[in-house]
Image (tube, rainbow over all chains, first blue to last red; front, side, top):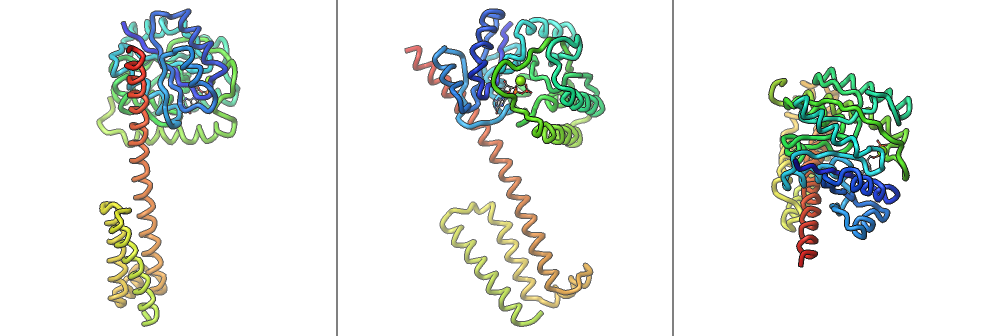
Length: 234
Length: 117
Ligand SMILES: Nc1nc2c(ncn2[C@@H]2O[C@H](COP(=O)(O)OP(=O)(O)O)[C@@H](O)[C@H]2O)c(=O)[nH]1
Ligand SMILES: [Mg+2]
């Protein structure tokens, strides 16, 4: 079983070494690829010096286009599963094997790592949880997928949806939309319990002000996806 | 429509058409994208050539004076052009994204080949 861990990294020089060390120590059986999305700090240099497996994008594509290049890489190199984890150390790679197990057991196409099932560890701010709940409800109404932690960037996709994402993946704030896309195309999305950590260094790309923009943009994107989706409901 | 207005409109359209042709000649314009521009010139010419038509149309759509009808036509075309430009920009955005991704993947392969030697 070939598994690729995709790590989007934008200005993660404070965290990337810890994240890779964690993977190399706890899941040496998996391959990984860091996507340096034109960071303005020395993320690229760190990857080069440590001989990490990494991609260097020459312009900043944002999280969507960045992660998508990881899926293209996974597709071209024939991986069975692609796992997305954040480059800031919030996601513990030890959960990956459980996520894949759950995905296989449930016969699903994508498994989302959710911090709201066991409700342990980092739960995010109240405001952000409110937004996540809203999006979760919207997604359930739009396509029937039952996912609580819809913005979680910790997820596994199988071969079929690696190929799908390599062709079609939203540009910015792609996580919730990807759940809708998979479900509408007849795929099954399940949640797997994980415990998340607080970001270890650097700053989150989503400031309080941006989160309002985020909510409007993502809600619209989800509704639009539903309206413009061709080919009947699954 | 007064003669003065018709002449000034005609001059404006002439300048506009000449500009399009100059840009087309210099190849700084793709023909495909200039079709809408030319179509716009033709419609405006028709409006100048047949003022009675404009007056009639102004009455039909309930515009008080024909000059407002001309303004409306202009604004409508500009909206159409802006929407077209947005769609062109979106398409190019997608293409550029794919290019950047492929450049990065190729770069990686090149580096790997180099290091194997
Ligand atoms: N490729 C790419 N990744 C990004 C960009 N901005 C943020 N990221 C990565 O996306 C992940 C999640 O971002 P983060 O700011 O922690 O968002 P949060 O966890 O939702 O607060 C991290 O791994 C970031 O390095 C970007 O512009 N491009
Ligand atoms: Mg984070």
